[in-house]
Amino acid sequence: MFTSRLFWTVAVVVLSTALVTEGLRMTNGPKKCCFSFVKKSLSKSQVVSYKQTSQQCSKQGVIFLTRRGFQVCADPAAAWVKTNIEFLDSLPKTSKTVMKL
Image (cartoon, rainbow, N blue to C red; front, side, top):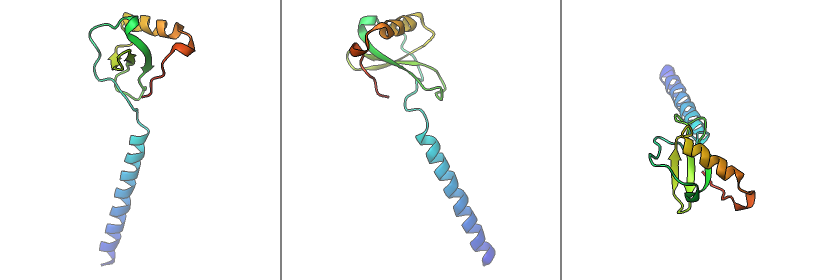
């Protein structure tokens, strides 16, 4: 009887700990990741802001916010992506749109 109660107590504690740590791990994870990239390039006039994805993501990417309000994942190694980032970084801070992820 005592060993059965001890077994179930230990089992509940172990499972509770596993659930709590998994829950904490999920809340600290990245909010947005890119799993594929847009194949067609976006012009400088189409984008209003960008955000780098978290290093916790399996694939590094850049998320552009377009004038129409779409969020588009792009390959950070692509030349057009670098050009758009340089363009957006050169704009005065007052004209940049802040993108929340």
